Image 1: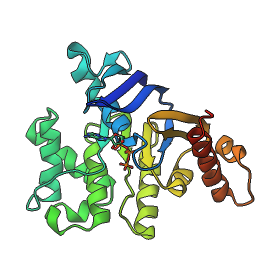
Image 2 (image 1 turned 60 degrees about the horizontal axis):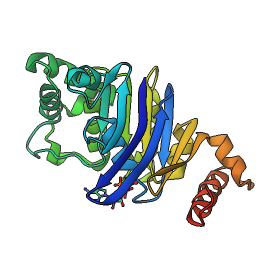
Image 3 (image 1 turned 180 degrees about the horizontal axis):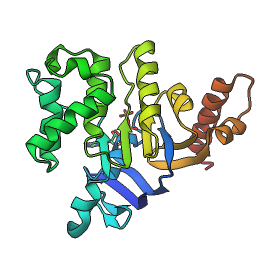
Image 4 (image 1 turned 120 degrees about the vertical axis):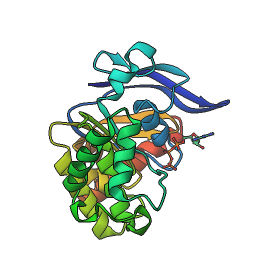
Length: 248
Ligand SMILES: Nc1ncnc2c1ncn2[C@@H]1O[C@H](COP(=O)(O)OP(=O)(O)OP(=O)(O)O)[C@@H](O)[C@H]1O
C-alpha cells in the first residue's frame, strides 16, 4: 500500500536519510531509533509533508510527489506529527473539523466526521472543551482523531506516546492497537517498550539508514538475554554498536 523507494534526504548539506526503501505491510510496524536517527524525517516524507531530495513515495498507484496523483494519494494517509500547532481557544470539535476542512472536506461533512473520530478515541465528552484546557494525553487523542479523518488506510504516527505518564502511554497504545484493525500503521518511538507492546514488525533506523527490518522476535534473537524486553533493547543496542563500528 505505502511504498518508499530509494528515498534520500538532505537538510542543506546534511544527510538525514540515505537510500531508504520500504514497503509497509498490513498491521502495525514500529519505527525505532535514537534521537536524530531520522524517524521524523522519514514519516514526514512518507506522509507527503516533506518532499525528499531523491526517491519516490507511492500509495498504491499514486505518487505523493507527482502533481497529477498527489491529491488522490494523500486521501489514503492519516498523519499524526510529533508536535502539532493549534489555537488554544478552538474546541476539540472545531479543531479536528478545521483540519478536515484544510484537507479538502466540506465543512458540514468534516463537522459530522470530527464528532465520530473524536468519539472513536474516547473524547465524545470533550467535544466542546477548548484545546488549551485538555491534558497531554487528551491532546494526543485529538492528534490521533484528526489522523483518522476520512478513514485512511495508512496511519503514520510520530512518537504518539512522547511526554505521557506510564498510564496514559498504555492507554494510547491500546487505542492505537484498536484503531489499527485492517490498516497499515507505521508508528515511531524511541521507547522500545512501546514498540514491543504494539508492533509485530520493527524497522530500526540509525544515522539515516535502515539497520534492521524484520520481526520483533528476530531482533531479540540478535542478542539473546533472559528478559524479553531487555532482549529487544539489547538487540537494538547491539545493532547500533555494530553500525557505529562500521559493521552493518
Ligand atoms: N529542519 C531541519 N534542518 C536541519 N537539520 C534537520 C532538520 N530536521 C532534522 N534535521 C537533522 O536530520 C537528522 C534526522 O532528524 P529527525 O528529526 O528526522 O530524527 P528523529 O529520529 O526523528 O529524532 P528525534 O527522535 O529527536 O525527533 C538529525 O541529524 C537532525 O539534526
